[in-house]
Image (tube, rainbow, N blue to C red; front, side, top):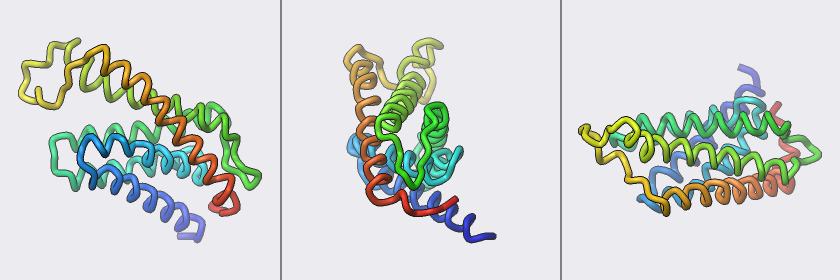
Length: 186
């Protein structure tokens, strides 16, 4: 295994472990407030490792959280962490955002992270609030996994998703442009 591959593996493992720590050791709802930490590290992993960095870091963080949480939500935790990484990689690719030695376009990264965080917020909210009502799943045994949709909860999801993503995009752009752009992984 070459030095380059070891560096990539180190970045993926380190960022995935940080995502795991931010998800695992804080009780709900504090761990949901720390989603900005996950978003920052997914953005940075996508900047370091082109095309699939966020997906890999999200997979590692989601797998560690799912395996060590021991709750019924483990598969959902893994899936949504993986999906969040896919959204981040997808939007960074769509907006042609690259982490270079010259820096990263802050406004594009903020916008891409706001959209990817909105997408994961809507996806997870739909899975736990809207989808169960559509298929009348409230009667099954896992009813405790689902939440009751409300206009207020919908508004919070629609507002906090992009705000969290924008803050994470700003933080990731700042960290990249100020401290990380000279680290060569590729």
